[in-house]
Image (cartoon, rainbow, N blue to C red):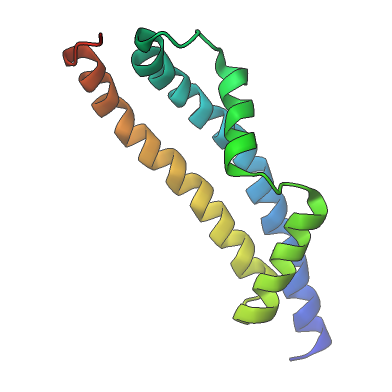
Length: 123
C-alpha cells in the first residue's frame, strides 16, 4: 500500500471518528430521553424516586461505559485495528452504525413500552 493511500485512509478514519462522536452525543441524549419515560412508567410506580433526563444520562454512562477514558478508548481501538486487520475508517463506521442502530431499536421499543405501561397494573 502506498503512503498516499495510507494517508487517505487515516484522514477518512479521523473524519469518521469525528462524525461518530458528533452523532453519539445527541444519540445518547435521545436514548436517555426515551429511557426516562421508561423510568417514569415502570420504576416510579414501584416507589423509586422521580429522576430527570440528566440523571438517566449519567446512569447510562456509569453503567455502560465504565472505562470511557480517552486513553482506554484509544487503546481499545488500537487493539481492534491490530487484531482484526480493519482500517480506522471501518472501525469508526462500525461504531457509528452501532450508535444509530441502538437509537432505532429504542425508538421501535418505545410505543411497545408505552402500551405495556398502560395496561399493566403496578402495585
